[in-house]
Image (cartoon, rainbow, N blue to C red; front, side):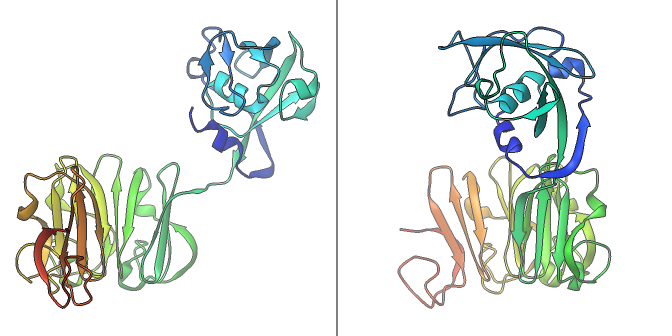
Length: 329
């Protein structure tokens, strides 16, 4: 409900209005809505009380019934108030005397006992999460549907082939999954679902996909080594990958030549491997560069490691590689 104001502000396809077919239970039709007070500057944060100024009772007609909004202030936003009352997301089309209306109740001379009709407009699918790689792009919608486009070499788009896509294209292998996070590397890709499951695809050179074999993947493929773990954060570098679990444990894998994996050596890892130097720490944020890595713990401590030729470690010295996560400062 806290996002209904944002939903109402989105673009609407012309001519795509349809009648509301809301579930009576979810829409709150089983009981009247009492004392709905809507703040003028925060239309999506209702509070209970009497409020100031004239108030009215409005009857709403929908296919499922005729709920009543009581004690709505004349200055309240019409769409926002009804969106909340019906327990629905907008955008809505509200009509009074067969005329579409918007704005406040006061602007349209809506008085006590007035009858309004409501239809929901179909909004465009809009990006919710966005990721960019070297030559490919990806986004998710608010429903958690994944789209990719750009260069398809090494199967990095996840469409089952290596063809390029010039427009956002649905990743069919993940239909039915709710993608909550995504990351794109040089020519590999990864995402997590709402269950905390990790999928990777694209170029597997150096083991960056984490499947234990050196073959590219043309479709999102489950990372078996982390089954049973809940992955909450994800990052991809040019040729290495990292994630954290819900306990704040850090795993890295892929190319290790720049010491960017943090395991104390420069060997590659083809499956997610625990970063032992940070065992006991709770990692809350991570980021990967081309050949260096960084993370922040829950205490706010910054760690960096990897290739340090240009001083990117932040430790006050240049031309020095750092083999394990080391605090900055």
